[in-house]
Amino acid sequence: MSVALVTGSGGLIGSEAVRHFAGLGLDVVGIDNDMRQQFFGSEASTAWNVERLTREMGSAYTHNTIDIRDRDALAKLFQRYGSDIAVVIHTAAQPSHDWAVRDPFTDFDVNAGGTLNVLQNVREHCIEAPVIHCSTNKVYGDRPNSLPFVELATRWEIEPGHPYEQGIREDMSIDSSLHSIFGASKVAADVMVQEYGRYFGMRTACFRGGTLTGPAHSATELHGFLGYVMRANMERRTYRIYGYQGKQVRDAIHSSDVVAAFEAFFRNPRSAAVYNLGGGRHSNTSMREAFAEAERITGREMVSEYVEANRVGDHKWWIGSNEAFQADYPEWKQVYDVPMIMREIYEANVDKWVPSA
Image (cartoon, rainbow, N blue to C red; front, side, top):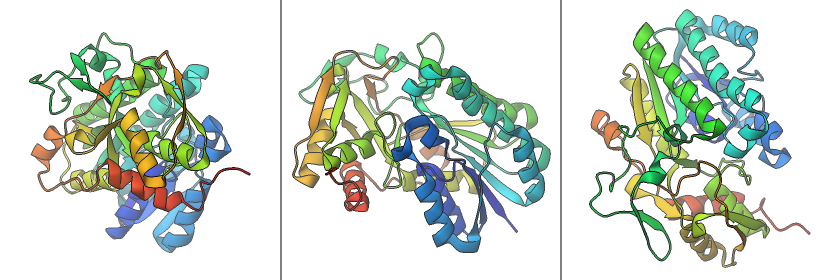
């Protein structure tokens, strides 16, 4: 038996990983205790996704309602499967800047402590298994905001000819910048994943994601940019724009393109690898442009409210470079761009995201 162990298996990337790695013939063991509902309320619950996975995947998927902060419960699970674990995909996290400020202890315990718990269990029970860690571009803090930008009609753009014109690379420093409490906890996790790779010779990868998105997102205001744009439009909610004239830019990568990258690493793992992973120049949008795309898809105008102050540590412009990953894994190719992503989100939720009576 070969097992793929997926933390955060009810979430966007976790559930996509469950389906993908089950499709490769692995038995998938999931860990998810629906903390997303605690973080963001009932509309952000992942329970519906866990129920669907359990129903549709059958014996290929075994679910465990475990908190990754619970060392004893996690250790028992790893002991149960031991060396049968062929890969660990760690997606469980507290994912919001804003929420982290409300409860820094929980944010750090989940993001940093939970990651350490996963790493140590891999070291003790299945050290040959590659560890794929969902990190974030927020490990760079607000340093991207120091880049030279030009203001265009619908977006900010990096100055033409800049070394990062095709995307920010992994050589950007993570030091001397404002990270946000969330960003700092993710830095701790990111560095620990690298350290277990170097110090113990484990095969680990940090994927520093841009905007990870797709139809399985339980989109809510504090997390899930494109999903929440579509949800706000479809349910006639007021979308709050925080600063930068709504011209802030994000690259967006579909969950299926993300897990295809995970598979490539699983098949040919390295030690202490670090990769930016996002939409790059292939798939990116400003908030204004995403609004316009949502309006094209639904035929309805966005309802929005502008707040002058930007979120603390928020990026004015982020387009990451996938060059390093593609150099190591040239067979990996992106499929989705922003219009495709937003159309799919709409079609997956058209019967669910409707205006309240």
